[in-house]
Image (cartoon, rainbow, N blue to C red):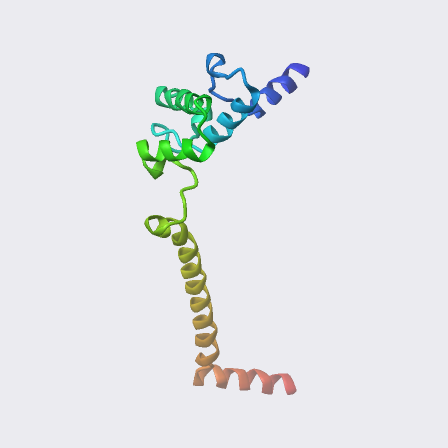
Length: 151
């Protein structure tokens, strides 16, 4: 039972692809490098941060980030360097500017459009049901049933 629990705990912990030879001696710089790596998309895996990717390009990017930090670059300068080299696609959270407005606004526009379509459909169904009423045959049948109930 203990082995199963240990196995489950091991599987539940996040696994990082950072190799021991990549880790910086300065813990502050290493923490900054990890924070940046978590926000940078692997250009091979695409939906995985380079911090947890085993791709060779991801390793190169992790090393590049650490080199830039050791050279004295700020976090913003590292991000700028990566964007200049790989484009804004490399960022999980691209900046809000004219070239990315569609990226930021499209999900909300789609949500509003979908909610409007649902509201319109439901309101039309209610209106159609209320306006339909009973046919002449249905009204006669109701009167017959009501008259039988009175007897």
